Image (tube, rainbow, N blue to C red; front, side, top):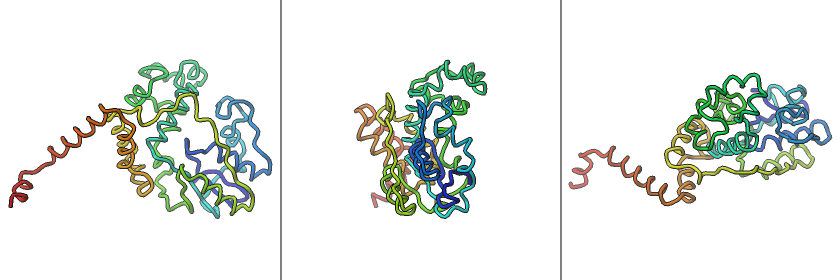
Length: 264
């Protein structure tokens, strides 16, 4: 599996979009070259040659197979929350589905005629997700984790860190590298999309879209936990619809012999 390697294979990292990968790459760069990474302007601007992601594409000494690295790690996140973060960052903040941006990208410019709308709202983006993922940069950021790992399971890694446990990652790598490993926290963006912005149908669609990811992440993240979190932040209309759908599902799956069994 390809990823980021540092110090002649001491550490191997599989970078996944929207799991603090910018901060992790910058710190690994500092460790590898013994100097801080210096950016020029927008750290994630694809036209900025000094952005860490673009820089590492040209810095081959940090790219390659991580199969034989002594310590391989990955950071994972709830799939739907990773999707929402990607939408906020790439579509809203970086406007990567806007006409101005697409016009500057020869590979994607011709796709504008097929997009239902430019600069889509969250609802529009979800409703036509399979169309919007034809745009390379969008697909890169929202494609399922299982696709990124090309069939590999989590036991391939020596350590799997949840997005919520980055302090544990800092502690472990500081110990292994015998030097301070500290991630720089970054601004989340102008407008953050969250679970409360989803209705029942769209959340159900996203959970199904990432169903293989949830299987892979079993024990770390689950649809059941996400539903409960969604209910806690949802409005009355969404909560009532959830209860109605749940009752309807029970009714549809109910078998008459169950009633007879209870009577006896």
